[in-house]
Length: 222
Ligand code: PRP
Image (cartoon, rainbow, N blue to C red; front, side, top):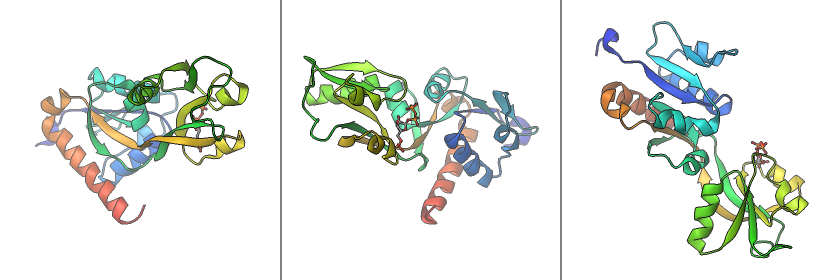
């Protein structure tokens, strides 16, 4: 394909570690990410002569932009993807951003209800919590929070939490422990279903290139 014919491909990324790691992979493929690494207050970044554009969005909005087709690709944690439950193609496990989704609470709290009729689960992930407990046939009340979820059991708002655990230090600092593992989480490359057809060649080239870099990094133990 001649350079002039290449379509612009848009990546939706959330600022921070997932974006940095994505730039690292793309740079290993020869993509210029200099502008995107230094965005200032800009939200749309595209290097001159590059066919790749980046938009910087909130993590939970990545699936929305990709679903609506204004971004062709998105990089997003599996947790956010599961919660959003949108019809996207999940094409690659990028291998970074690893953590676990867990049920956590006070030791021995896995089934007990303290002070309320229904077992209460505090979480940023109401949809995941609903389907996790539905699969177990357990009635729960979901308390939706947007941060500092560990406070739930500590302050008596909920019996347990469903949240991500990375180092485990937040749980430990609050006297809580993992009670059940829900699933492993890592960053995923997702893409819009229509883009995969309309920009097929360039999208395939990028997916294959990223996959190769992920494999190389994993073989070298990084
Ligand atoms: C996340 C998560 C836990 C913590 C887990 O919160 O919700 O609170 O990180 O990490 P750890 O196991 O390494 O301690 P985040 O830092 O995103 O802040 P938030 O509570 O405001 O959502």
